[in-house]
Length: 236
Image (tube, rainbow, N blue to C red; front, side, top):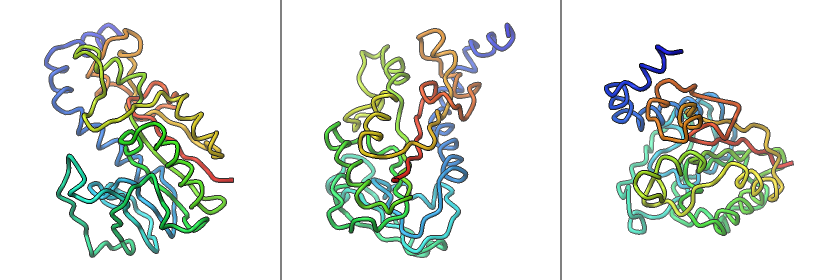
């Protein structure tokens, strides 16, 4: 353990982790998409026009994937949206609209809804409304999967720079129990809750350690211990 502590506290290792942590997070999220997300014929991808589900490793064929996102003119970041019209997995449609208002989607018409790091980009009340809209459009037995930063960890991450959120476009960053309560109050059954990018040193010391991205487990059953929280929810 002493040797591992020495490595974790080595300044060169720390700098390497700082340089690579976003790539590490992305790689682990791609593993999540590839192995944890369910099949679905009709899929909604909320806020995913710049990082399409099928480009993150999703392997299942689908009948239709609808990407719901703001138009480039309405976005502060990531204005260049490129859609692959030759996706081999199924038909891909881009719908420029508000992901918190799915009025154009019929009740009980969707098999799987994915919100990949998007719920934090709208205020709390709209996030709650988005969950209700997702519940409405899902078929019974359908899945709602989402991941989002864990405020228990990001509040430590941003403390040294005066607090705030880890991205300028974030309106909120959820505490795990807060988000689970919203999902359950909406009517969902949470079938799986995982933490991505376990942060053991950060948690034990109450000080942010970038080396956790290198030495922490990629997935943990303790959702509160991950930099990212992930949920697979079922509509009864």
